[in-house]
Image (cartoon, rainbow, N blue to C red; front, side, top):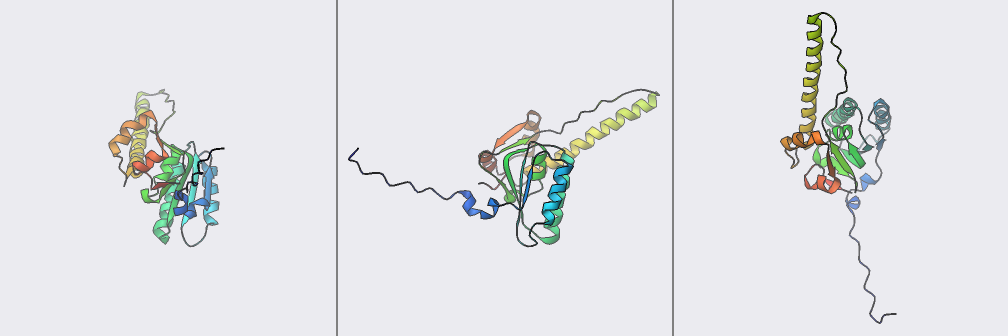
Length: 200
């Protein structure tokens, strides 16, 4: 045994969760694909959430339907604007693709991630086969319709990108540049870039 006196135990600093205790028990918990089943669960949990005070929405997802994500985000916006409720976003483990689209509905100062969580931002993906068959004018109409669909989807995507970076230190052009390569952002980096308020 050493004659040296034992060093006093290190006092651990309180974690960020101690500053935001409400985040420890989210009112709405979402996990899995962003789809209509998640939307239904979101609606049920929102209906059972407290009528007063802040609401915490936690999500962990590898992605899914971006339009469902926008739909849930619109529910958040309407509640915030109609009732002035504070609604907080808590991303856990993975917030990929459509999950990040949902996150964009929350101002950056209402966004949190748990330690080790990663965001993944990317371009929308289209999987569609276009069959050109029949009268030539019909073929032109089919191709134009597909082109219009792509152009409109790009506009929606860019609107979402602007909402994700609004209020952060990430430039819209940087996100546009990096999105085609699937941009993974670790929680602490997301905090440094101002995409979220804090990591818990």
